[in-house]
Image (cartoon, rainbow, N blue to C red):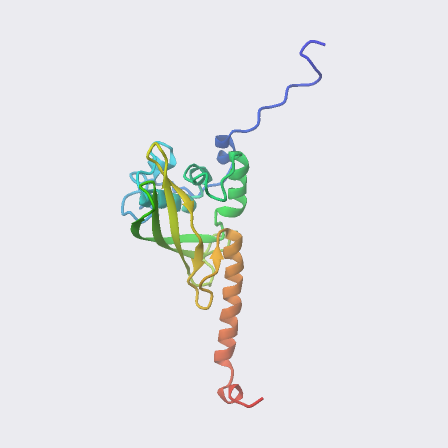
Length: 223
């Protein structure tokens, strides 16, 4: 039979660009707004050229800032492009990776409030560097996008970056820890981790509030 078989040929699998185009973003309508990375420049003049793939991060700090704003604006393609192969999240199947990021790693339950960047530290060679940072996230209702009554949550990380042979800096690794009272030291590497922490913070706050409201004479009563 002509055509070498039955039925229509299989459609080509979607490209990374096509998959990412199907995801919602949080990009502003006005590109002249201040860039969320905290540089003081407008988004159009700051991180947008990196997000479009027109430039590569020329320093660890620039890589960090473009990734932060990519998370803030929900741009998984840039997260993929700026992740080193040595990172535990790296996948050769980019479309699968993008779908996983969109489902689990775009922090839809949080608003990105601010980024504080420390000094760059030299690594063991000229192609490695470290940065300490603090990120503040405001828990929101994922449906209404309005702030919840929960307090903003602050997280710290010491990130490792590596430089490619072409000079672009990529994110290699880093463990995020909570600075919430009583929960320091917990490692947080995904939105699921943050969601669990958010529940635990509420639980701890509830216990502390009950203890504070409990009558003093009853607190001091012998068993």
